[in-house]
Length: 167
Image 1 (cartoon, rainbow, N blue to C red):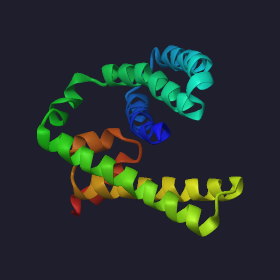
Image 2 (cartoon, helix red, strand yellow; image 1 turned 90 degrees about the horizontal axis):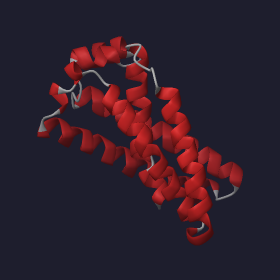
Image 3 (cartoon, helix red, strand yellow; image 1 turned 45 degrees about the vertical axis):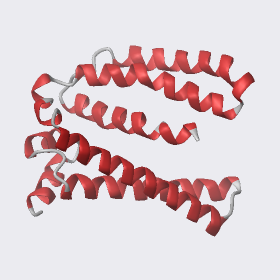
Image 4 (cartoon, rainbow, N blue to C red; image 1 turned 180 degrees about the vertical axis):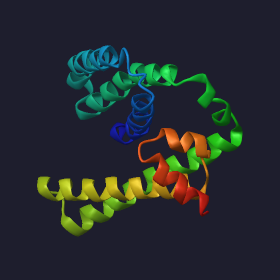
């Protein structure tokens, strides 16, 4: 079940890296990707022999943490004030929780509908990812997690800001 927890740091890294790219603040990112890959390799060496596949999940989760810390650190300070309220964190938690629940439900439904072969698992994974992304975009637009300025920093932010104004 460790692999499910990887969704949160991986999603945050993806979104925050996109923000950093749009602001041309990716200096040093390659080094931290390398550090994360090295940590993943070492984690696999030590954890897989004792914990099997769960060890690989734990190694991945631990390896993502330095990269997540780096991208959070690189986000400019002017973007943080709106994100330091309990309301914002509550709405973000609601969206992330809904994403995870939706992905798990779709995965279980996909396993029941398509089976558990390798090809069926790929199809199920695609549906789970698309459904999670749909829930995330819906939550961003309707729960107003980001203000207009913050939306404009995201990739396709102009489009999201336009959709958010209508709600």
